Image (cartoon, rainbow, N blue to C red; front, side, top):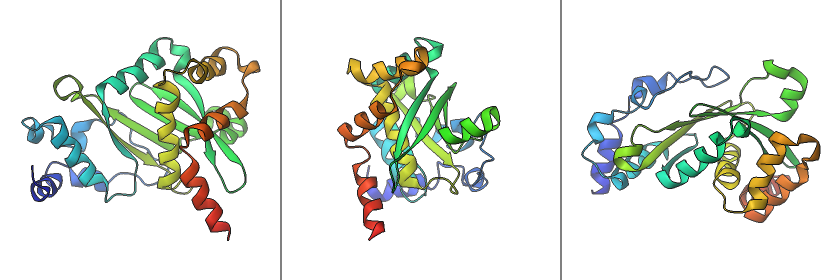
Length: 221
């Protein structure tokens, strides 16, 4: 499919009226479905690669986080999360100008809500989500892909920061490293043994936060 047709389709398969009404702060959409933002019927005859290009073409122009996840990676993540309901929470580290800030991720069905740890410590259950990742499995069986997009509170996070957090979902849940996934188990089952610095070490070893950290250091000068 040519880039011209991809560009044309990307403006027709999305429900732009609905997208335009998405909240920009705190009022996140509940029970969001793929059909509420995307005309599935229009892409039924498209390949997974063509849908990936359409999805990326559209969201590349938006200030948000998005992805097209291969079914193998998605199944690995969900298998890790729901092999035990206790694994539905974990901690991510976000590079800041001075050190790191921790965010707690909580799975609710196919939604993954992130909230700053300090907000949970100070506000408890009243702590609001600051980033929500929406995973859409509607095309999983037929096309072998899961589409993902996000909503975030821009008063707390920018797109690069939200992307860094989102990347850590795969880092910790879709990993073959026993040591890495062991942090998820320790966080949920043996919190007294959990070492926050281990999360930072994994992030730095992966290189996922390097670009963000570099940009923040440049802002200092």
